[in-house]
Length: 319
Ligand code: SF4
Ligand SMILES: [Zn+2]
Image 1 (cartoon, rainbow, N blue to C red):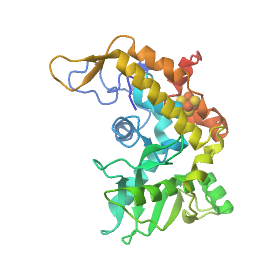
Image 2 (cartoon, rainbow, N blue to C red):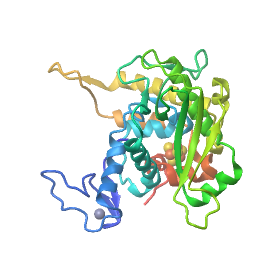
Image 3 (cartoon, protein in one colour):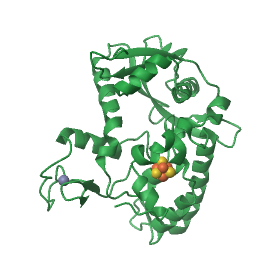
């Protein structure tokens, strides 16, 4: 994600990205009343600024279940007045994953990237309009690589719901199935995954009827089923999301050509001329607001870090 500035309640307004831990030469003192502990805030910034699976206009196992417009904004436009509190719950998930990683016994695979960095891309959904190169980061695999375990942390109330329901979310099944396909098709670091499960975990009180952790086995989905799935109750399917994203990439390629200014000093870095950002916004504005129906309408409001910019482009001003 590209971040130009943050929102902070200390001034009820816009602050620079180094507001909580000023960098050398910064003119402003650190925030007098940060909303979270400093390491937590810095972790949120670090995770979002340096995530190389979910950046660079790349498709991932999780992104294909998100909103294509969101990916286009996250990877190409600088967002202003970012409210870091919106990133709180995914950060708990990341923190748990790091803890698990630290205590995973030697010999297990953990947090592995498929395809590995520098390896040839892996294409899924071949022969369909949604054919695309996909990346993913898996949680843990047993030493014989048969079982994939994924950790999904949640609140106590949703832990109870999951425990009573017993079954798996289709989104988890699709994600694990994408990992399985990536494992099979990676030309480097290929891994055979035979079974998958989710460990659902929460910080439960003593009175909670659900245990703090329980495991839910996942049934595989085929590529066709993944493409047809409508994630999180959205109106758009995984195929729709990927096709919208590919349409955006094609339009972006065209404007990249138009606005590209090559540096004369032989540097490979590409610069773009005036009007490039406006042109980019123009093509993003044409993308459907695919997240609107997801999570019973909550995806845009609660879980999208770029909703401010998305809404501004729709003429909806957010204070
Ligand atoms: S606010 Fe909603 S529609 Fe807009 S980018 Fe975010 S998820 Fe997509
Ligand atoms: Zn502040």
